[in-house]
Length: 304
Image 1 (cartoon, helix red, strand yellow):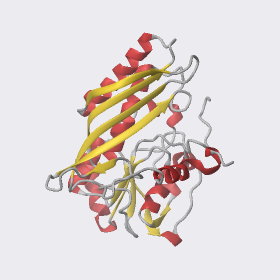
Image 2 (cartoon, rainbow, N blue to C red):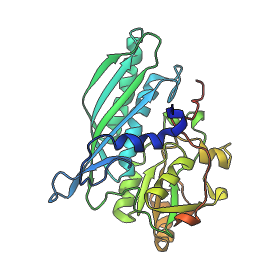
Image 3 (tube, one colour):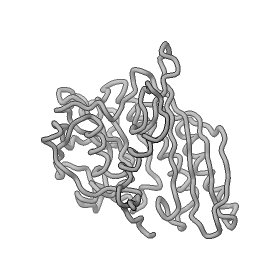
């Protein structure tokens, strides 16, 4: 009998979505950073839907500060809204905790969630609490709505052959602590979609080795990158920059004719955040392969 470890995360998702009814005409369905719902074709705005969960011993260790864990839980969702060119609005929080969890831990977790919502203009709409068996891992699950202008929404599946590939910030080193205090790139993507709208975009949560192939495949192409061009966190190797995951930077593509102007405008607008051209989209048969990255059913969590 095949197990989830045998097939991996992406294959599991492909199998599961075929087993349930789906929107026959979605603006963007399963497979993007958020679902995109077109409630009113006459409206300039689209609805974004997102759900995400983090699990103790997988996404954070018991020794992590609960306020930082709360920030991470919410910021992951905000990052996905950023990757679609949108903004977060209403959050639903589900906590699954063991009965022996200290009340102070849960309160500080919520303070961290609140820090993130306040920073990015979102609000709590509701949620749920439930128990896990004594000694089991804590689970924080978040569902949220967001909004994006129809003309600003960017998908993973619309890159074109020859497009330049860019990443924001620096890659690698998530276990050094940045996975708990990263800043979702809402400000930067709002600027991008209104001035240099990318042809495709997503956030980097599972590592460049996993996420770039997803974008290229969704767009029907391949990719080539220059490992020597990767912007690396201090002390990281190119392979760590490709594989570590949980960077929560933005990966996007744009027509090469606009690349030089984009870099100049970006440097003027965001002088403290790097933007780096790392490669280009190719025809599917001409691309390269990357190894590494995070797969929930094949990778072993650090500290587990």
